[in-house]
Amino acid sequence: MTPRLLFPDKAVLESDSEMVMRYSGVWAAGSEHETSIAFGYAAESYVDFGVPLMFLPVFVFGCLMGMAYHWWLGIIRHRELAVGLVAVMFWMSLYLFERSWIKTLGLTVTMMVYLGGATILVDRALIWARVLGRDGRSAAETRRG
Image (cartoon, rainbow, N blue to C red; front, side, top):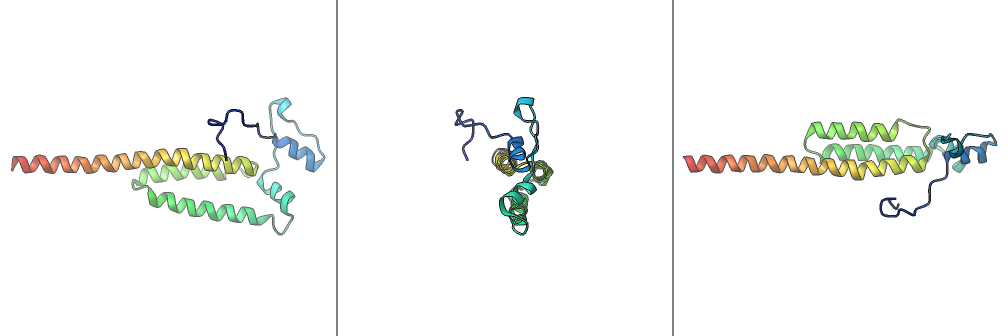
């Protein structure tokens, strides 16, 4: 994966409508109409793997998201931050079944890196401030006593 921020000449993703037209044979409005009609990841998996194996990518993605959910809740110490993070991150990543795999994975990784990374920094800053606050109070109390 290459972020567009670092690679501004990166090619634009093909419109989801192109895939719909290619595999269904039905015309669908695309980028020329400033819209995109997608199969979604379930139909993409069907096109790529067929009926028995089409469920495998969804199952693997679900398992990975479950492990990530557990990890984020464990790594962030402030419960309010952790719950807010996983609510936003996982709702945005999982609620649209009609989004293509490439867009679903891209959004998920982007949010985990940027939103998750920022949340970890805030969490650690709050922990550090709490520790410094306690050390500052105990030092002041020992000077008074």
